[in-house]
Length: 400
Image 1: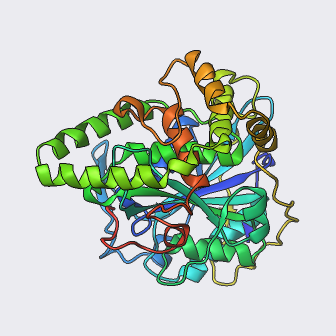
Image 2: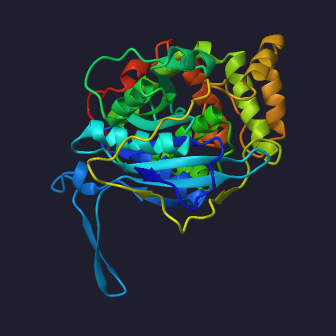
Image 3: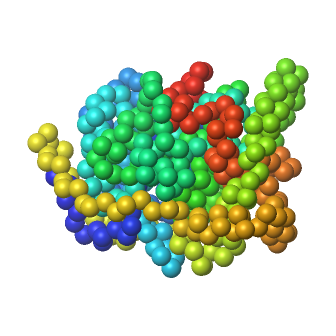
């Protein structure tokens, strides 16, 4: 039984999870959750028993010295809580670990037990896969769910995938059967440059997460890291004529597929993010602070006879804040592209244009707009379709 002692009641909590391994190409997903934990100074309140879920010959423990004393760090999954401040504060429960080697159903039940006890309203699982996407274009990020109502209200795709899956797919289905709204966000990583890290894919996931839960996420040095990563890959590609020709082929295919995506909806979504970042004090986000009471951990009984805590009533899924207004604005104004360009003149960064990555940069505004466009037009020929992104693994494996 999970017991909560000395910890304040959470405010509209959302659980954000990522797991290293099969579903984490370029370490993009796990790095995104690590970024949230670092920027908002999360405090670990629980860790799953490593003996129950991990093969230590596959994921080996590490030894380190602490003031001359040898200590061991065991591979496991840890949970932390951060409180995001602002006019409408809310809490995030961050789950970060390694894809378990065994007992997946028990693993998911334990994660869900924490979600039920903490009153989590929605679970967002981040993943990354390898795909035929050029590194010179914005990273495609798809949002999928098994809940048709959630897909309709939050502008997501309903997964139809059939085939082998990873812990991301298993946890999403476990949440659905338990009545907990669950969404998976998948970033497509170029298969020809799969080695971690991939800050550009991490940045794309955080931008999509920001749109989904309506929070302003501090990006720190990620935009600059993404630019440096792309410049480095550009230089490597230029040294090999065959690679350069292949990248050009991917660019042409991507641009042709994304022509219909330069829509009012994509531009409106980008403009909404621009306004949210320009006025940080007016939105639900803002500077985050670590949750107080972190010195008192959550206590739990790791015995086999632990009963599952009762599940709190789950509110119905709500649309993304401001999405209707943004869509209405885009519909009423056929000259929305011009409006976006006008607004971008005041922006400190490059003008956001859907489907383009100006100057070879991975700036937050430009890439986020294209990510939204890629999400809106995933059916228009994108190589990494939602079904394969939801649970499956494209050929070539991940770069994790």
